[in-house]
Length: 256
Image (tube, rainbow, N blue to C red; front, side, top):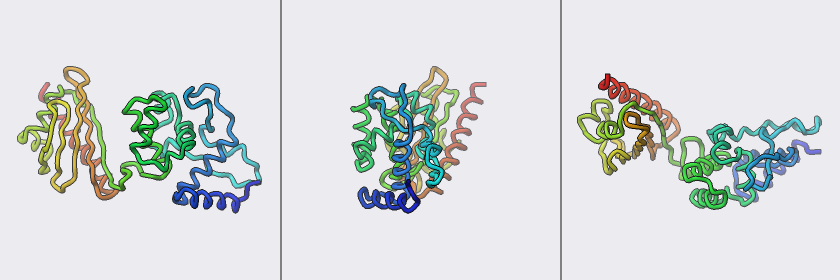
C-alpha cells in the first residue's frame, strides 16, 4: 500500500536522480503510478509499440486507503487538446510523454528532442515542434509563452480577408504601417508576401509570417520574442490581437 510518506519519498528520490523541481518530479511520479494501474489501449499509434497510460491518469483504481492523487491534465500543461495532437500525430499527450520518458528526453536540449520526434516517429516538422514544446511544458522545462532559455514571447494569429501582397505592404511600407501600428519599429529583413523581421522600439524582436489562403485571404502569425516576463507576454498578446483586428477592419473596409 502506498502512503503519503512513501509518495513523497519517491518524489524526492526522482528529484535527486534527475535534478527536477519538486513539482516536475511529482507530475512524473503521478504519471508512472497511473501507467501501472491503467489498462493498455488497443488502437493507438503503432510506432509507440502499443504502450500507453490512461487518458486521465486515472486515480479511481487506487486503493481507498491510499492517498488519491489528482489526475494529471497533460493537455492543459501542454497547451493543446488531446484531440488535436492525436489527429495530427496519431498519439495523445499521455502516449507522447510515455514514449519520450523512456529515453529520458527531458534531459535533452530542445533541438535534440525535436530531431528524435521527427526521425523516430516521422512527425511533420510543424507538429514536431508542437510535440516537443508540449512535452517540455509537461515536464516543467518551460511555461506557456516561455522559451527554454527562460525568455518570454507572445504569439497571435488572425486570418484577414485580403491578399498576401496587400497584407505584406501594410507591414512593409511605413506610411501604411503607422496608420494601424503606431509604434516605432524598424524592419530589418523581409521576404515579399511571406515574412518580415522587425526590431521593436524597446529592442525586442517581432517576426511576422504570412500564409496565403487564396486570392483574398491571408493568415497572419505574429511571434514577439525576447520579452521580459509573463505579464509582458500577456500584455503584448492583447496588443497584437487589437492591432491585427484593426488591420483586418481597415483592409476589409477598402474592399467594400
